[in-house]
Amino acid sequence: MSARVEPFERVVEEHGTVVLRVCRALVGPDAAHDAWSETFLAALVAYPRLRPGSDVRAWLVTIAHRKSVDVLRVRARQAVPVGDPPEPVSTGEHPGDGRSELWAAVAALPPKQRQCVAYHHVAGLPYDEVAALVGGTAAAARRAAADGMSTLRRTLREDQ
Image (cartoon, rainbow, N blue to C red; front, side, top):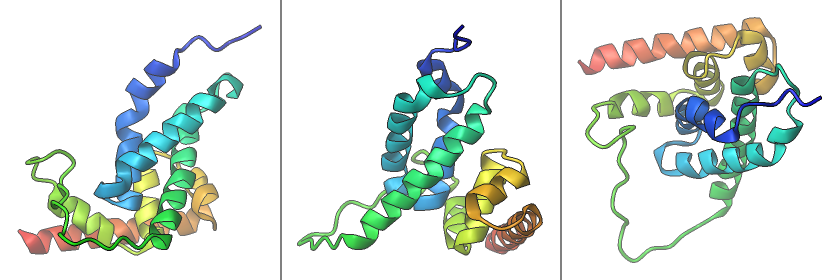
């Protein structure tokens, strides 16, 4: 009695962009693709065991959260001396898309606000699920997301 009918490729197509945005908000543009790849590799392995009727987006964002934390831990341990500085990484979602200021403002938020903004406003998770990911209560997650959005509005308004 298997209820799973959606191929994993469709899951990637449907949720891949949102998960990439969440990873980008959590780890920055240079490591987002690594976190995204690790997320979908882990999801591919676990997908056959996902209960029918589960919220796939919330499940993927939870995996992305954990993989992003892993990426940050690995990055913190690595010191890479270089003779010549590498080419600068595009700061926009796509080169030339004009969103670099937005992503820079998101990256400047305190970690909990950044996570709450990413999980609620980018991934669309309800505050109780955001609270389950970041710890604390739904009200605290709502407050952190509101504070983050307020800071983003103020920062981006000042840039104009």
